[in-house]
Image 1: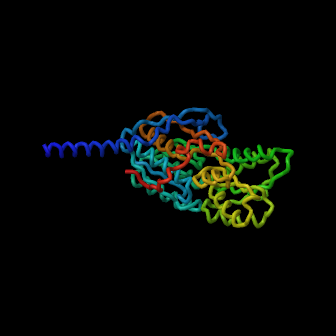
Image 2: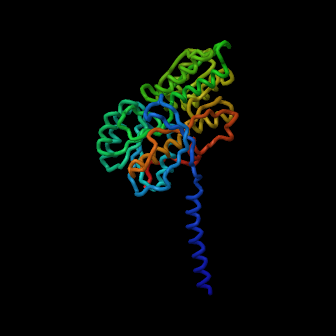
Image 3: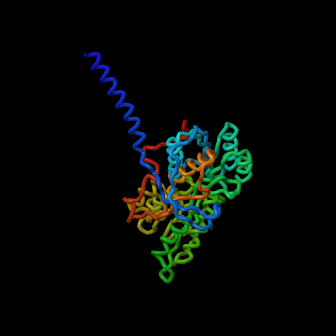
Length: 361
């Protein structure tokens, strides 16, 4: 009897253990269907936006080997995209190797890393590009081998791409500018803005800069300085400090997420936290916390986690010759004090305990 009892207990323990594994797998929320905007025609950011609901595959047909390339992993924005590609690779049952180039000045390194990935047998490549034109020759070479290439987040101009999973950073910049215009419409007192769009030459920065400037021109807003720089916080802090010294009477600092995090610190140190307001043009955990405590006014979100997930799904669909949307991205919306406690957190930010992950086996 005792043996039977021990065996029974063992069976229960095994069942509980396996049940826990199943439960853990089941605990990840279904992220779909997700509101997106497809571009018609594809690869044209000025094309018509078609509202849609994105639904991914249930599972990959085989364990494909995917290569993912990011510009860097210096800030929490790319950690969110990382979480998206990692979680979706695991869910679909594919291998994923992620490489990061260390910053927006390292185009040659990004090209070399991707070439190595392909040489090691990658079935598909997903690229968060350092330059919108600097990877075109590489994209052409990879696609000529029959390897799908997916453009995620930043934008590449090559017509040889297989698909794009990204939003218009022009629209991200525009929505940030529009938020200011609603507070300072034409005819009201002009406010002065220091603007920090990000690293020069990156496709998303070119677009974001144009979008913000176009929106700001419709209100009582003067952009007194535009400062470009890598999205490392130290670089941005120096740019913010320089701007505060050169333009002591500015009313707003607007820019990348690392800019706003640096600005909150710099303004506090300068005793100007109550005089200069801060606005981000994309969304990270730092921006989330700063909006909650009133240090940052608002930020548009492009649901970075979902862009990563969709890019993985597009790659698998292309490999398996299944229908896929060639150009899609999550619908953009503004987060501020009014909805900070109610928005869809899991689509924009990685879980608090997620650490940068570079492979899925």
